[in-house]
Image (cartoon, rainbow, N blue to C red; front, side):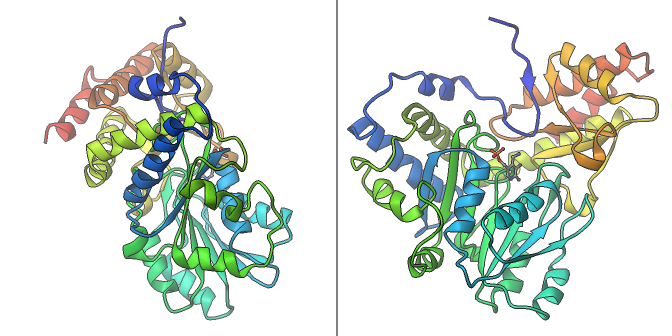
Amino acid sequence: MPQEKLLLIPGPSPVVPRILDALALPTVSHVGPDMGRDLKESCENLKRIVLSAEGEPFIVAGAGTLSMEMALLNTAGPNDRVLVLSQGYFGDRMAQICQAFGIGHDVLECEWGRAVTPRELDRRLKTANYNVVVCTHVDTATGACAPVEEYSQVLEKTGSIFIVDGVCATGGVAERMDAWGLDVVLTAAQKCLGTPPGLAILVFSERAMEKRRGLAAVPAYYSDLLRWLPIMHDPSKYFSTPCVNEIRAFAEATRIIIEEGIEERFERHDLFAAAIRAGLAALGFSFFTDPRFEASTLSVVRYPDGVEDKAFRAGLNANGVVVAGGLGPTAGRVFRMGHMGNLTSAQVRFAIEAVEKTLAGLGRTVAPGAGSAAVDDILTA
Ligand code: PMP
């Protein structure tokens, strides 16, 4: 076995042994009782994770991009207009999906590093009507977390269907579907939920389901939620073979989340983000994201003068930690460190120690232990 590295890219996140063990269970019949029990339990737990009593969960083989596509295709009809709130790379992807399917849409965007403000949304809504509004909760390229609750307050009076891309947030950052009136939360298995990649995951509110039922047909077959609905209610039925092992692993992942407690999990993400940022700041790094919008699931980190991106990331890798480079306009200028899912405080400490070792290896003078001390101040406060 090659030496394992600590995977701190902004997803996939590290997968704990309990989930890997579930993944390695024997493949069982896709319409049999073991699979049925795990799929039903996953759906029930998923509702608890997004704080929805009546939502309809969907869990199908795919990835986050499929759940984005499914959300749009099952809510936006031929006469509808979609508003995409884009704070970066994945908001732009939403617009590209609209384009690919000929869905009428406008984009309200902002510069990288912050999110569209509720006031900007309100101003736009005074000039046009939208049947569907989509936002990215946390943009994985910029590290910005959108004010989803405030958006939903602005949207309340419009009757628009509100879709939230939670791929880099669900299970790590609060998404209170019922309390905030979110219509669709879409996500994927591999980030805050801590499962290996391979699942497109959505929860539709009753209102969003009504919207789907009101669309005579959608330009989709595999992605048509009405084909999946009977399977989600009764997994002994067949539509298309679900990825049995991945779903069994996901069931275990949701059990871990319920055992931790969803509110405790959100708090842990806040705590680890603060600890990691304190450690990095103590070592001379600064941050790309506007502090008013910083997400607790990843950090987009600027280098101190004289530290070169490729050399730093290669050195960090050699010291056991994998991080990602910047995307788009930030490429070469930042690194992105994910801190989501089933991370432990020991892993947080290890990561900052590895950063410190890497800087020393690059010939920088750092006060020995400065990063770790800053981490400990937060973790033990
Ligand atoms: N939305 C966001 C916010 C993401 O971070 C990602 C993946 N990084 C996606 C959508 C797309 O997910 P996937 O790569 O699983 O298709």
